[in-house]
Image (cartoon, rainbow, N blue to C red; front, side, top):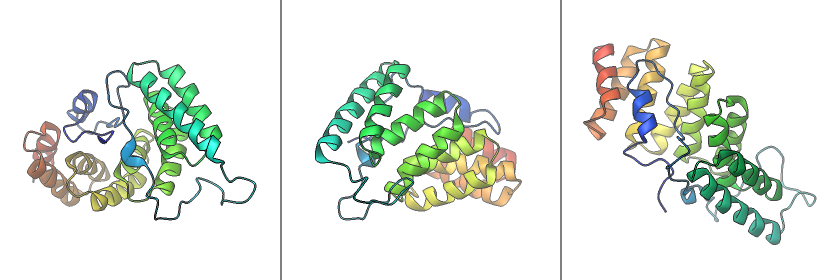
Length: 216
């Protein structure tokens, strides 16, 4: 399935990234973007970590709940894609209530919270999704974006470092990493990030502008 973050980027992201030191709202303009989150499905051969609590006999999710949660998630994705964010959020809430280990529902809900500038709750869901599916770029990138929105630039840079290691060919990660380090005043790391982004995506205006600013 396609990644929820197409490599060419989203129109809203491009507009935001073109502004110096701007905060990249990675997820969405919820209208018209892909909500195909299949790439976030946890790998079956790896142990899954609960978002907040360990798995016990009291909180093991039944197969019926998992199936119903997936159905709510699919409905939520369709609603979000059509711009019906309130209804989508309600469906994501149902999905997470039925299965708190549903990575797609957690991630989709986080994107909606992020789009509503509710960054603290978005970070909680991104963190849960990342814990359940380590080394996936999307939750790390989403959480970094919310950290940037809250002015927590060091935390964002740490997530972007991890994301760049997980997917070194993701130009979007390198561009936003460059912005984070530029805000931290580390021109060397910012220049290196922008340079990498331009090498991967030569027409990335945000990366090219950033590189010019830091003197790379």
